[in-house]
Length: 125
Image (cartoon, rainbow, N blue to C red; front, side, top):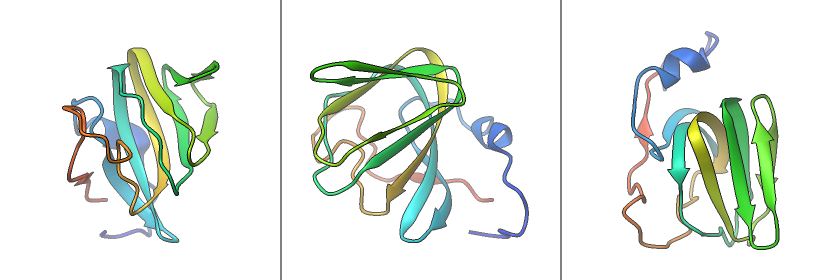
């Protein structure tokens, strides 16, 4: 990553891509990636055996479907899915989401899907 001495403008970073469910790395700290992604529609049911997953809604609203309830996350709010918990992110309209995940986190928890991105893109800061 280049010059980290400057502030990162999330709105400008989101403006650099249009694809949904394709996380982009915008930072790195303590063995974790800082990622952003645009959500629209439904992702797949999955879980992460060894990693918690942090979702902060920067723009719009999302839902995290759990097997026993639905968590509504509005703009400016965040939710942490604990490791091992099966979940499915959903966004009825386009939403911009900031995520913190350990570097080794697989986007779909290893489940094969057309939505799975094998190589996460990196946006130069």
